[in-house]
Image: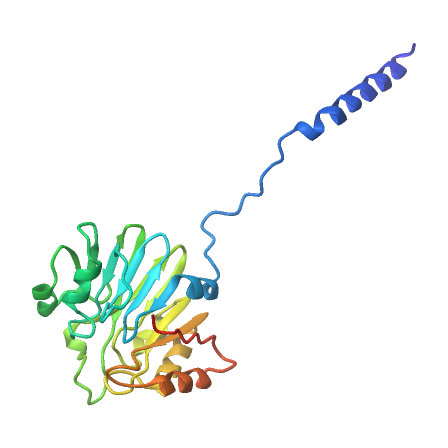
Length: 250
């Protein structure tokens, strides 16, 4: 038998052996790339609740509340963010409902906030950034312009940008449309639309276009000022420009 013929027979035997054992070989699992953020619209629908006024809850691996006020539904908070000391944004009674010994509170560095808050509190000024429980928290300016005096720039009250699971979430706080917004980058953004103490629908729509997020959620209406019609007007102004998600109050 020639050498070439022997080689052919060996290859044939190897092929038969491979075909015999191939069904038993482990199948490689599809590995998703790590760090890929969830689609912002999906995240907003599934992971964000609005509790009325400016009260927002982000519930992913952590439970995060922003300005909890008159909460009807509660959960133990990992993080609580306070934008400024007005009673509808800093409510000690509501904080008590959701605060645990492990809860971290983030607040503007303000005398009134320091009087009313207790526990593990981290104080920030506009422009400062900290990381708490793997959440990157950036304090950003929030203030009135013109003749409004409710939220003066000198008070150093804040909005926040949170990075949660790779998604950047911007809460503007109680503010007017301000120049700093043009440097803000976010996937999801909350804008006040009451029109008295902060932006109205028209100004908020312009501010939303300044930032150009993938999802916009209006807040601060329906109780102390503003109504559901503000939200509808805001959505109409941004029709075919941005995705506006009007949340039902929970």
